[in-house]
Image 1 (cartoon, one colour):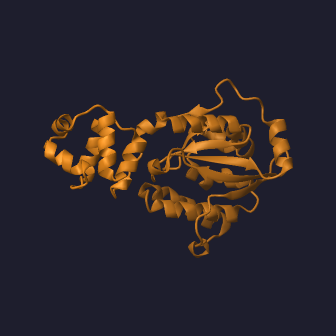
Image 2 (cartoon, helix red, strand yellow):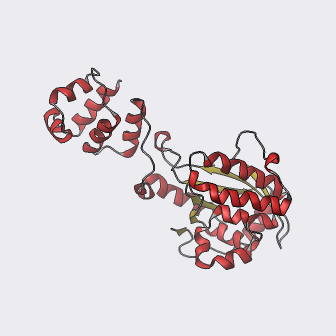
Length: 271
């Protein structure tokens, strides 16, 4: 089915006539007819307005834009109320006591589950205490940079730090506002571990990491994955992501389940 036929079917399903749509769009009925018969190609602005006038869902708008050869809509605040993100909130809550959080493109935690809050308080108590209430919305890059942050109790912190640095430098290409904080992170690595820029890995970014920590309970080992909610056409560089941590061995699983206290009534902390 071509773009024009899809637009025609969408208009018909919305009980809108060609004339009514033409008046809303400020174009002629003939122009609407030509587009629906694929005899004319709408501009991105016209196509977007057309779909908004028909109250098309964001997923449909993005699918139509991609079909026409345009880019999808960027992230908008409304996505925070979308069913997919509500599902992600439920997922990170259900994932507890294993850690999980949702973070924005600027690498600030938007929501964090009970298991992650507990683990942060165990592995970097000074950093969490210093943040106070703001610990629910950690700046993830600052957390990597701080001497008492995430890397402080990590085994082989250099390998993990370089993996994060590699990912952040790639993300900086599409989110330039990250650069000042990434620069500070990189400088902290030079200071703490004598890592030079030349030592940064050049291989493809892998968001699956194995993270191992010293703790008062013994060695804790996790593997991580990052995931994005929504349909493929809705995913952009501005989409929020979830990061889920899983126990990498039975001992870690037993330690977390035995020592993470029961969650409060509202276990997910939202922005």
